[in-house]
Length: 492
Picture (cartoon, rainbow, N blue to C red):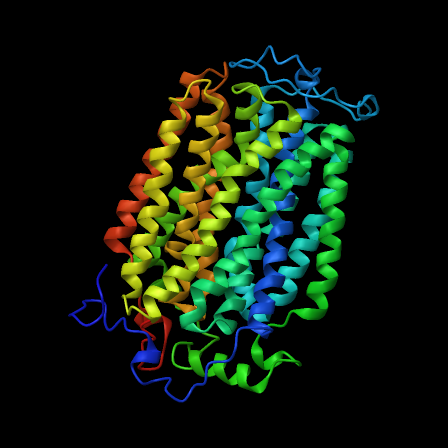
């Protein structure tokens, strides 16, 4: 990695604390602080968000007529079946459906058709009216439609698709809202730590939701998957309503030391004209498009696994509904661990070792995109070696967690004042893989052969490699001129 000190065509990238702009700002303790409390609360929010997003992937296995099999009837899988305890008899009460593979693909991808609609509006509305209630009501709306999922499924596939689209509309505002909130709450030199703690909830939601959904389907029936996780979302909304605040200045219980530390560390990087949004400069910014391409590429792999991994476990590797959830969750355990560790390491390299932010972001992005590509391709060549297949999937997703401190946080580096809007733009493009990925993958795997799944893995890996290369060429680490009206650059 390149350290600070040499000439830099992007401008000085040295953290402010080492350049004298924040010498008078006293760092507030992290323990019991409001900013880390917000990180925990928002992490629980994203736990709910991803629980509601992925539980259908497991429930789908049990919602279909051709998967209502006994414990030993896995004759439809490519690999030999795995022994599993007999399912309790009382769990055969929920309805099952005769949906073909194309219909399944549309149902799994329909969430993202709503999700893509509210990305940019979410960033704009969060900046204009405040992120707290937009985030809260977005998740609450998703919870309500999750609770209606069993009713919609009984009415027909089209109704279920409509409900999933409405869930996506609610969830679409969550990430732009939270980026807007962090623009006011995250000191530059704690940015990687705070954001990785906040967004680790998404990985934990996946880790918990996948196996727990499998257990719920096994012992109860698939309808309870939506009722139980919906109830958890209602509880979170109550806590969010009373404990979250838009900024340090509106928080009634924050210490004065912490308030001054946060506002002082951010004073030179936020726009002095909050009502003005430089749309032309934003859409023509190469550093922003570098994030767009990286985000799109990474999400192609992420969403392919998120929506189709339970199907792969069942139809190819021959794991039952109960085993499926646990094994599908393992890759996200690794991703969660690596995301938190990478956040600590990234801020250490920037603050203590004085590495340039752009260098850290690019290195973490390359590891977090090329690593998953290599091991994802390797999965296709493991055949029926179940241990090796799950190991490679876990390593692939774990390395993907490193990108959490790469391009994923870069919005706040190049334009903190407009972080929510930028996240809305990049996440709009990054949602496209969730819309078309499952449809393309199901179209390529009609016979569920290992050769067909190799094609799916190769496509995802190639897109990842392209995204890593593009971001390495055009990514930047300093506040862009259009993003701040004062004559400062935070250089973080």
